[in-house]
Length: 60
Image (cartoon, rainbow, N blue to C red; front, side):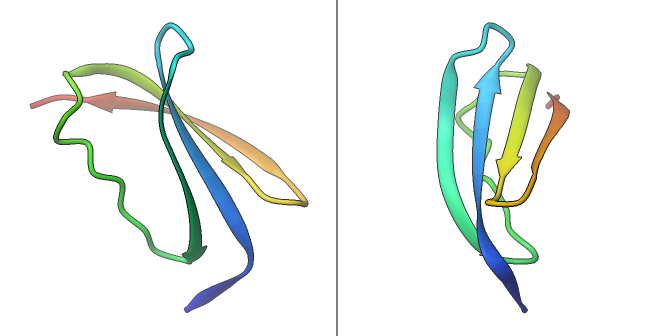
């Protein structure tokens, strides 16, 4: 199902460096993290009406 508006996803490493950026338009989406080393990351989701931050821990 489509979202009402596009959402930009931005993935940062613990130092604040942008690693990935993509625009999603569906309610369910996946980000390929296979190239990332285990550790702490931050995901920011921005739409025209709101922003949301989420801490992400990648482990293998």
